[in-house]
Length: 513
Image (cartoon, rainbow, N blue to C red):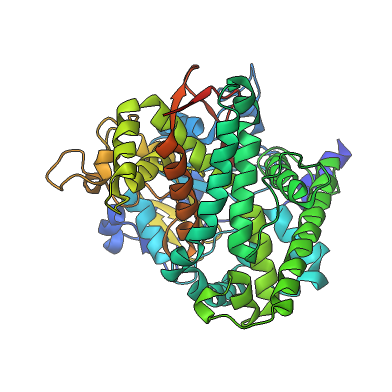
């Protein structure tokens, strides 16, 4: 008991709302009428409805089986649905070791805050990774913390250096031939297993993850790393990167979204996480050094537009180049593999859509219009991340409540994207909604533009979007162009492990056309 009391004493006191002074307040459109209202009439932050938290442990009692009304296994989508039905359009949530959160269900509300916070936006990353880079290995990273953990001026400096390289349209043309070659190898692996449906599904996730890593590694490093070998050993550096990416999500989920005392002492899971971060960084460095060696040993210069991402970044800032490559080898694996699975599943469940897409693929026209619509629709229904986040840097008033600085604002995009309020037949896979005329009731533009944001919003949107979409487009074209895909089992289900993930087993069936 004394131990628990001591921990509670270490926890910062709750933010005390000053009812008389609200400096730098912004108001959502929903509350613009409060401009002439006295501050005393604004409800304090603590009055926002939501789960009642316990000291240190947060709202754990609500998630315990037989005691809480939520249970331990709900996805974030499920939680958003429950909160909306129970509390309404604004919900406060305290989750264990993280900052207080507010979920806003009206797109006008979080749109207003996101835009007000988009000059130098704060979007805190994983606290364990922040600790690893800024404290435990501070001398190693020396102020260059990457897009996943940097904030403020450090983030802006990093993004300013990488933006000109990642956002050029010519990037797609540069990498298309190599990514097509990698996709061809993946297609061949599928073809070799057509008569073994059980084996395809057993290894489906692993093989797709290997393809994803091989693709993003080529983009980041300008060279192949051998992921698609059939005999990839556990101690192969490529396999280690895949294992690290999986363990990264597993440990951060346990430490940051479940009850944990890692901030007070090194728990066993925390130690495993730090070892995973070490292993991922060391393995990334191994591949990065190899790429640098190839560049230095090249006997001739190549045009600037033909240089790889890492070669261009090395000319700008070597530390930024190494960190960006390492983050690509961490963040660009599971995300793209999940997205491809989502597209394939939806095409398998909608054969008429698959036939229409195949017709476009086989046509002589160069258009990818319907393919792009299929990808957008799949990411609307099954996004990689259920929500977007901003941490407030100033005071806001939303729906009559004061939201101070230091609060994480969540937009529940996956939940909103499946509401009839925003999309007709919201749970149905209808790619046409992205390409029909504006007069059509299905037209996606009838929805608020902030409802569906699979790649994030504003200046902190995903920097690798163009590359990720290219990888997905190329592989789907290859697979659907030559194979028919069906689904032979019950509807697929998802689970939340920081990112969304599909539950296994898979029930895909591929047939040669």
